[in-house]
Length: 368
Length: 252
Image 1 (cartoon, helix red, strand yellow):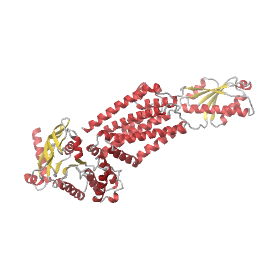
Image 2 (cartoon, chains in turn cyan, green):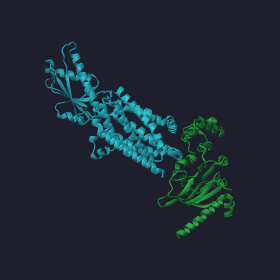
Image 3 (cartoon, one colour):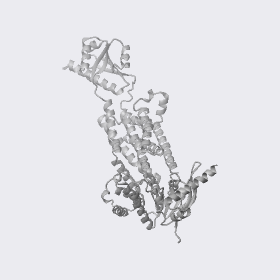
Image 4 (cartoon, chains in turn yellow, purple):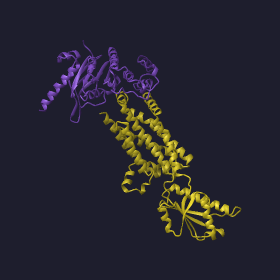
């Protein structure tokens, strides 16, 4: 145990004295969360909208003007029939289309609740939800301006419909995705780098000649990174919940256990890479190409897996992050428990066992 | 003079596929001896040393190191040997003091003895002033002697040195050999590989490896006599030539 502590101490010296590692450890998670967070919840200025005004009344024109006065929207074109709605969105000219019903004005004056319809481009779900919120706010302020002293309840109902992505699946996608990325980078990439560094320096030989068992050496190399990954997962969760209001509806203990499971998978990947690579550069390349890119592209983090060709979907299903992100979303966003995620969990456990087995076997072979 | 035998090999062999990097070498090393292992690059020196320190498993043959069986008692051997590689492997981002502490730690030395040794080494190597700066900033010669001190920190019976003077200038090399002599005088056995022929003269006995085999083994003086030459350099050249002739005859 004392020997192990001496080893850990040394590892922490390495980590604390290497600027690059420190940067990856503490700056990257924060910047990633902020970049992704703000990139998707940005304020909108002059989002272009199409309007199909079936009412053609002074009141409806007033309403349209009011919407534009917010500065968030800009009229792209007035259209005359439903078919043009999709045209504009497909061409990328407009973010959403507003349909004002025929009896907008009459309903309004009759103190009924007129209903306007919003057709938003759901392929960019975060933007779409924000825009719908803006329209809601503006409708509310329109009524307040129009009837400041009204005691009666008046309102305009905004019924929104998403084209292309009706369930708005990736609304809070980025926090689970960032956690998956960061844990992978720290656990897999940094471990493979630190082991490769020992080999490059020749210190791995010295360690192997010493009475330390290979198992202790590897454990000593990965434990610090496991701890740091965990701290990072907490930082990201904290940032996500405090700045971007990402909910954690399910059990936080289950969530952390799942993080641990994923960290084990990532560490095994890191060890596996370092058994195959003797240089830091090689280890870096392998973890970039073999781990980071698939995780970014094929895990459903950036692009929905369901919209990819079969082959890529297949590849996506061997990326551990795919399952981890699914699990995180289930726990955080839907608040479900083991009952719904048991399959993904089993897959990750299976991956952990296989990868650890391979890593240990390869490490032994190298000693021959 | 009956000296205790500390390393003994019998037809020790390492094959990579069909290629025998080390081909049935047999020799004995006695306590306190400085045993040189010479050979050109690729002659099998490093492979041989790696087998003896447990980094590489022999394909066949027998060996004992420090009285323990190379196959079955690896753990016991590990505690009794020290190893310094051609890279003077220390942690560059740690200070000399931290390096000593770490290696003391992994050899399970007591805190008190680590403290004493640290003081002793720093003073002896004149490293007190740089005790708290990273190893990467100290000159190669110092680094080399520090690496040796670290390799002998746990007071091993045998010290294996794999080309310990590579890339170091002659002046520093001589200094380093003084350190080696001192260790030998203290009863440590030194097993050293090198391809510098002038260094061979410093060894008590040397074995010259050519193409995986031990082509000659004796004291430097008797080797020179045997080959009727003035220097180890010429011994080596003659040996290599002779070997080339035999192999070319075989291939014909």
